[in-house]
Length: 215
Image (tube, rainbow, N blue to C red; front, side, top):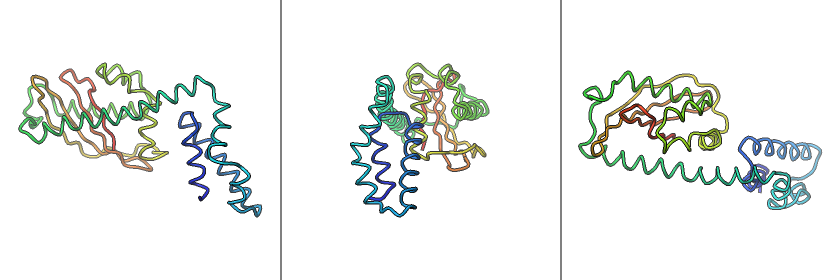
């Protein structure tokens, strides 16, 4: 086992938020590298430090019960959010494949420029971490998912550090009809310093955020 795999395995078993895990991983890697520079072999270092479980248990003993409960809740949300996104995507995809999608420029409910502005505002709020404003602009079913812990976990699936936003790409959008309900669905790729993220954002007739999918 190399140093990165060893440290990552430990971090996965520690019940704390992503930021604290980063600090712990950095601390462990620094200790290992320092000892290797002093002539110690990695195998000897790992043996002396202990097993993955032993080290993780040691860190968990110093993490409050409240933080561990928050970690457990966020872990559940991390599982739920992709499931919700997949379900939304499947529903939208099904209607996209059938004759239920329309050119948004012909819509009686949505204005193309208004939707594009709303999409960019949503992304700017996500980047700024203004979850209060995001929740106020979303349907009730989305509000519980729009929080720092959940979105940090989602962002980390693409990269640990996105860096500053550099530019918005072209926007593609359609109007989707589900029964008697109308939705504006837009997709845009945003370039950051360290990663490019594609957002698929859905809005209802009142321009409330109704779905978000990031890849």
